[in-house]
Image 1 (tube, rainbow, N blue to C red):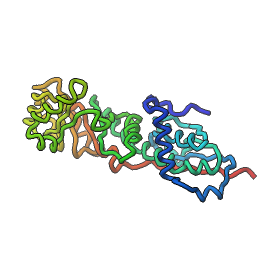
Image 2: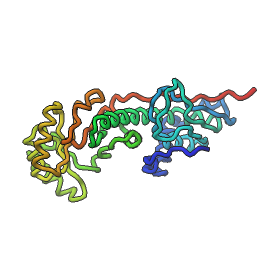
Image 3: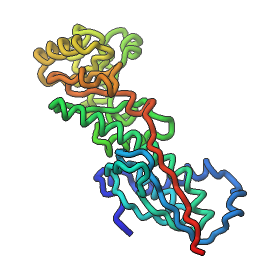
Image 4: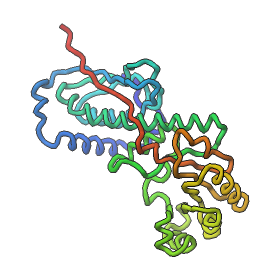
Length: 296
């Protein structure tokens, strides 16, 4: 069997997590009987994984393999994790072997993971290519706008696609948005309260709508300023002004950024550009699994 999943990101997901997720997905798809399993029985079969979206980035191999391992099948990968699948209309990507009924139990959960993760990784790779073409050295990042219950897979796919995951969850970093500020009374009070809990070990980011709000946040001790929903030219001017006054401050641009206009938000004074469309509305990669007919 060829070595699967050689991208460095594969080492970030513990084996027990893969096993837990695979069992949850299988239980969701087959909570009790599998009547169709009677039709195929448990004879050994071979199925070919086909990619039908050219120039896609392959992502999600560990999850795909974990599902099939759980049902007693093996996966032989032809492409490694993070590889770009070629220009052909249909590309053989892997071969799955095992009992027919078990293989078909794992088919849909495994394909769902691979299609979604590969779609996200492909979009991330495209965004990174745009940033590189413009000579920008900041970080393209995702957001928390992920599918409920599927965040780990989607964040992992960002890694494979070459962008920053941003914070994993509310516990990972403090982000004070407009609602936090309004409920607290001011940016200064919100930052002070947050710092009293998170201490030195967590960064604090504040969503700001103007240069003056950014200055207040920086003076209060914020580490990152998110300039939210700024027009590109306004963003450049505001980011430069804040950087000149607070050189250690990180500036994030967010809101309204898409693959079509992301280049307009890249500047030497912007450190991070985050996009919700990395996960929301992102196209999937078309994969199918075809069981091979037995030899006559």
